[in-house]
Length: 275
Image (spheres, rainbow, N blue to C red):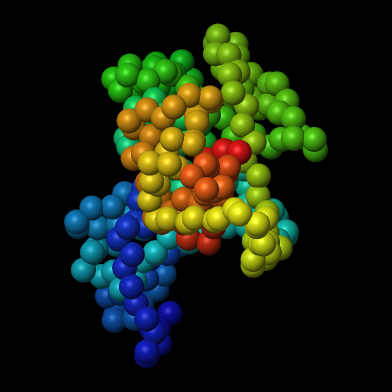
């Protein structure tokens, strides 16, 4: 595959994180170029390793022409927001709510962020941990103890037609239940087509929309996690995406609604909604 004259080549370092689906255009020994598309398994100053459909491809940094994150591959012939698989959707959400500490366990991902939210303080169980389940769960417990958080495993599963989460929802769920792990907080991750959203919304008289790149004191005071004020680790997690905005609807000095919008390649996220 040749590189076209005038094509914009860019290496987006901030997007190159292990576990993210990327495309890496790189130079071949004969001077031509090709793309490595797949999951970024490792990245350092010397090379990038991409797990493609044909196997792992290691690309020396000196040969990288362009690199960026891309959305997950479609799992079904549906509009983009419905074509993504549930496991890929959980990986996508990880880019919008990045844990302070993230450590691979095979395909699984151990995460810790000072105890703020289960999403950032749990093991994301997607794929294989590379160990028998009892040994993998011991690693989960050890990691949680090391970082002073509760041992939690997040198991992505499709919800039922009414939004209910069946129990057990998967074979892994059943194995965890058999090992004494209880189902604690089922959470729904919903998708929608952004083209359907109105470009402008007229607020009732007297209300003001405030949008900022970082949360101010009023926003932070209004947001409650499970009914409680935010812990110190919360603010760091709230600004952990590639980009985010913090919106408030205010009536004078009073916050009526707060919400957080975030961005990753091809997707926008809506979290931290408080009414």
